[in-house]
Image (cartoon, rainbow, N blue to C red; front, side, top):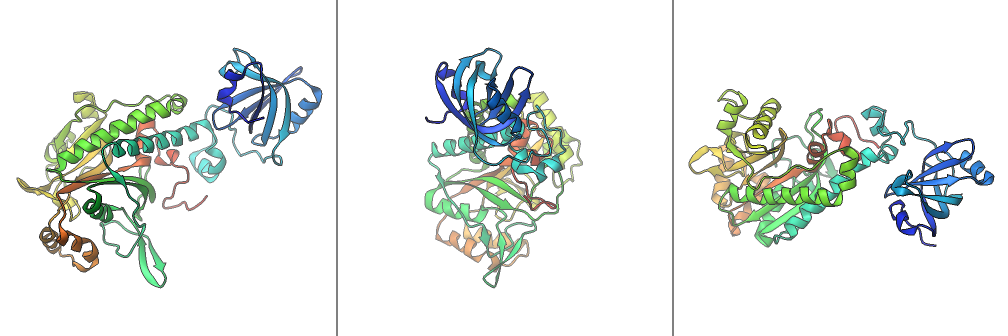
Length: 428
């Protein structure tokens, strides 16, 4: 007899079926016992009346893995309107040690540190697993949208020889006796792959050894990177980002509807045209001094409130960041060279995406490095590629965990990360 999932029970009323999963909860009443079995799809209610089976169920501990064979009957008060009666119950392993919190309660009562310490079982709770289902759907939408627009998925090294890709701290390691570093991003490689496929993307981990201990930062996170060639300027990149976000949000709605319902979340609308403001105007809107070189979190929140109030949008582009705050490979605005053809996308008042147009001429790279007083040697393998012809190009990167946190309303990005890595956590 083939195993079926809990959500398939309504199609088998009157039939004998085989279920398998975890003991989610037992309710031991005087005349009958209820065994709630959890599987990947949801919950199934098993009614136990036979004394021998009841004795067996009473000995089970929560989270023990079991197999149940019984008959499906209709019951409007049971999950999905059906339940399993006259069961036989067989443990598929030894009795489980119950976790230090009740997984059957609607909300985990343990604090986040305790949940993270016991992540392998905390993630079984529907609220925690719902966020991961949303994350998976978002990545599926990201890939599908870009595949449909002629992009090619690439996979770039996560161990690199240079630590100078950006100003952030890096994780050093020993590579067969030579110094190496965990990659801070696939930036250089995805640019080089534009010279091969014109349009590329990558889904992969990036590593930032920055000493941030906040609710929005991780030392390792998943980056959704995109790069495309033959652009006129950064606005072409912003248009592709808008399409990508719309595809991600739509796929979350289609594939993770149950998870959204569990969290009480509705997906936002991605406007046909996301509102955009120049950095100088953004400072004014946020009430920041005109000399401010970057946006602080408080400024981002103010801008998010403004975008929602004035445009009814959860999303806002901020363009034209000062060149002094952008990496050397960023293309300047030809009309205002002190500002960049770069942008950030804010989602509900938090920076979600950084992107822009890149330099594409070899001489411009040499000049940009010289202007910043940086040697060419650490970048030689990257910069030399531009001697062989590269089109005008640009791209962006979305932080997956931050996207899911903003979408679900999570207060801490760790709530939507399976096994977060930060300043203090290397396990489990």
